[in-house]
Length: 212
Image 1 (tube, helix red, strand yellow):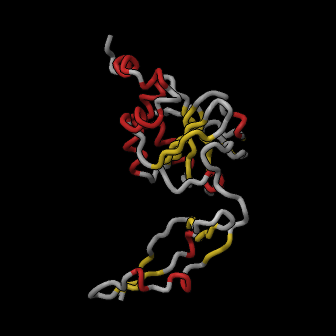
Image 2: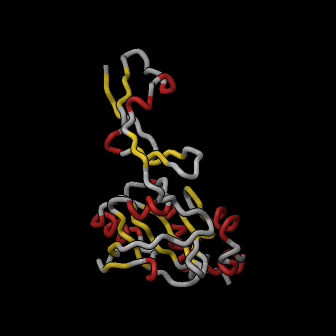
Image 3: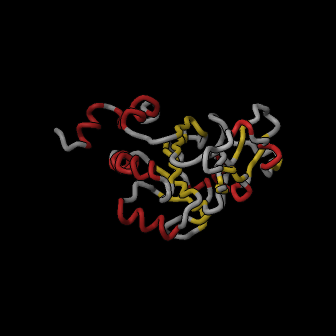
């Protein structure tokens, strides 16, 4: 018989506006597996195994809400920064980490967007700052600044489920759009072009490719 951990999301949406159930990663249950077959997950009395806690009313912001304030170090400079450090213009907030394979997949396109003038702020999520700096030195840095979020507290306030995620901030600092998953050119043209019309235009695309 083998004991192994199985993963659950760090928060579970109960469908109620006044309650969220958080699951501590360190207290995730164990799944019992025999040599022949595994016990179906639906048969497990999950509530008896999972260490749950009620999270006080500090709900993730929704589209239209202001970006939550924070006081965290910046990845490269080490200085303390807050939400006031973000420019008052449409910009992207990209949630990333070195342990995230999909972040590596989308990284070249972030570099392209930065070259085209899109302001991108990074949220380095539950990562090791030393590894994150090495990663950017190797692959290139598309970010105007990076918020260090080792414990994931900023991500929790933002409502992050994982990495990568990308948010659009409007000129007033409110969340205008949220995208979960890899950001590529097709997604950008479909979902982000209204905030960055010049970048999404065919002329801008041709210019980024070295065309006339």
